[in-house]
Image 1: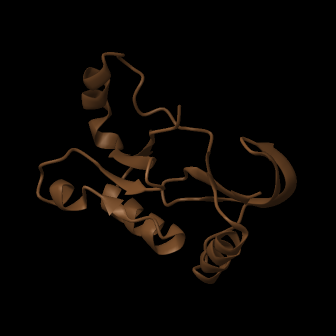
Image 2: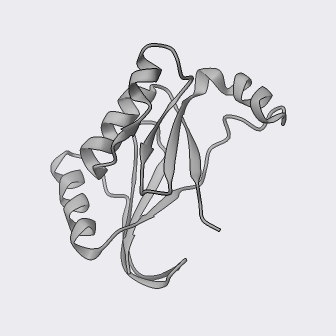
Length: 136
């Protein structure tokens, strides 16, 4: 079993995709289809097996109908954690700091899916979604 995708609620999916591309080097998925109105949202690719869907808050009601659970759409996620190798970890941290993105907290020796990580840091995207980047 593996994590396929996470849905983040955003004001402007294109702006959010630009942020994830600029600071995390996550390429967009379905951007052209979204731009021409053939897709209701777009995504960014985390790995060959995982994406983050960037869904506009304006279509939360439509998403409720999609999976049949009324009132479930639009709820915030506490945070999304991305695990990377040590080199990429520090490259991302430097890129965020250089871009003026506030680092909320840096932690050491925290527990995660692969055991204790050496370092993790948190920041927010343009919509206030909290993102954690860690390396083991």
